[in-house]
Length: 205
Image (cartoon, rainbow, N blue to C red; front, side, top):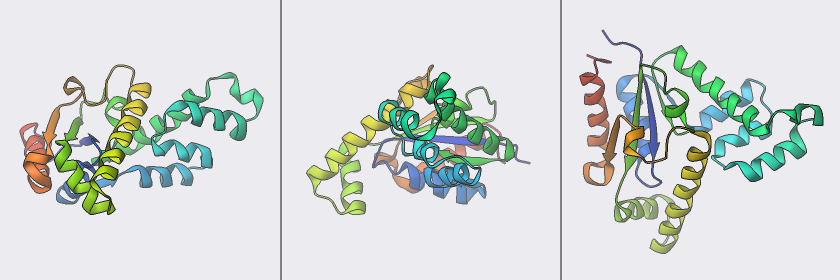
């Protein structure tokens, strides 16, 4: 018999972490949540468009300015806006985790759920050449443009994660149960590794 679990996957851009998470969820027969679906959940729950934009992993400064200027009356800005926005994400992810087993990509889910004994935190990384090859093919970019996008996106992800995760650092091995080099293993074997790890932790049979 399986017990409830939440696999929270953080990943470098171009490492295939999103595809690994999606295929893992399919293999496990559980729900898969990425930023698009989380944004839809946020929108359906009545959050404003500005709150939904939080799911684009933008660090706080420009976002907080737009929130303060456009979204709330002055009386509501007495509490720091970033706390309101992040709390909205916290509540969404905690509700998802309580509802049943799932796989969540990004969104600081591993930090938000760090006190959950059913959490399995995974970080997917790869060498630059492997990431460039994937991004070039997927996004139809030159090698230089692919490299530029990888560096820029990972910098943004690290900024977002490090700002909102007070006790963790993006990519730090001490912040995760399992780290995987998808450049060496590939997508399918990375999925199998996480699946086997869940077995070893007795989350699945």
